[in-house]
Image (cartoon, rainbow, N blue to C red; front, side, top):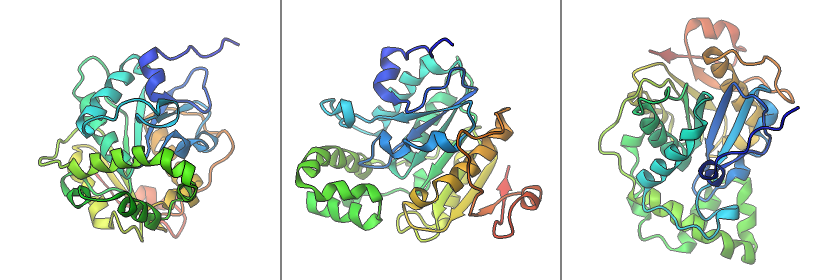
Length: 293
């Protein structure tokens, strides 16, 4: 069997593939949270159809990009990611972003949708972030390292354990500072609406993204919108990875003919969601749904 072709240099710089797919029918491009890395998505391929390839975005200052300069703002970051995706768009893409990653994914989606040379993303999944026009993290501008560490720790990610090791904390802090600087200066004064269907997700106990703030993502699309509410806090997706990816898989199957067998099996969604009555009939009793068009 022929090995998958290597990525062009620009794409290889920005995207990490934990599991390569020979002939993907779709690529799911995943954007980490502030201070996060591609490792946040290292096991996602296990819960997705075998013909979906996961590309995890590697921001500057992470992993083998530790010496790369940080972008000046979210717009610059989105410009570079969108350009790096250009050579890969012979295969359909969907975008997923969590927390800060949701804002970056949205900005990339806006740029891809405006490109007349390639089809837009088939779907945008946003998680753990208010809609762009509601985001105001300007209070973070004077934050000290101690403030940022306390904030990161309070959000409850399993990945923050590394920050308790002084040598690792020293290595990771520049990326955390850079990401929170991007958030502090991000302010979408207008909402750009695309024709890309949007699925918004949040935890029912998320202190960063209340349910109504997640529902406000409906203003970013002129197409279908769906809200999924999971049990848990800001990092609900760490404990409910299989459930979240089961929901994502269901939506992607409605966009493309994907293989029905996940690579290692996926759990059923344990969400409270909003979808049409037809979707309700297929959901377990604990799942509500509502989808708008």
